[in-house]
Image (cartoon, rainbow, N blue to C red):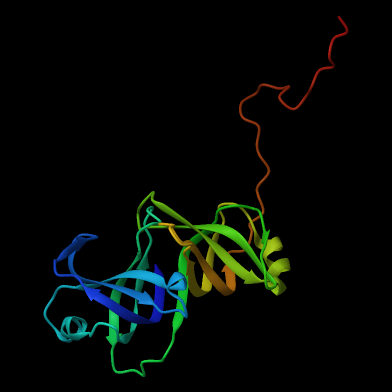
Amino acid sequence: MNFIAATVELRAHSTDSINAYGLDYCGADAVVPNGSSSGEVKLRVLCYNRQGPKLSTFTDWKTGTRALITGYLVFSDDTSQPLDLLVTTIEPNIPQDMYCNQVVLGNAFFGADEIKERKNNTIATKIGTTLDNSDVTTWLFMELHESRKQKLQDRLRKGRGICIHGYLREYRKEGDTSPYRAIVANDFSTRKDRERAPSKEKGQARGYAETDPVPDY
């Protein structure tokens, strides 16, 4: 599960019911706001289509206003599409200049064993995250302050699972359909490495660990 708590600004409600992940939702186009439109995190917000206070609050949400939403992020393999946010709770009665962007990725893994140097004392490495019970993988970057570099070097193993706490960041160059997408991590955690058991020879054949000299023809 990938959890998010964020102040989300509504752009437009969807007029059609949306069937996704085996359920029917009411949907909306929204963003986690930024100082410039190129840095907004675009979202498709989905609220389960069942009559009750949550759905009523969602459908009454006014265009251009912010609501504090908690829920789950769902990544897809199409980076040109906004991330899906499945609403758990929604609170519209907040100051309209309030900002919150807190994310926990619980099913991420290192996608590479390379550390890239960024500007402003930042380092980054490629990570992947998957849908529940799915082979679909979305790739993005985990950015960290360089003070975490030693920890990252010690823990970085391609394919190793990690849990990350931070905030989402997207950036779109003019004309690009897919954004640069990253989670800027406050910190991360991994399981402790387990010692590998020594391999055991199978059967009775011998000679697999020996190399004969090259003949002098």
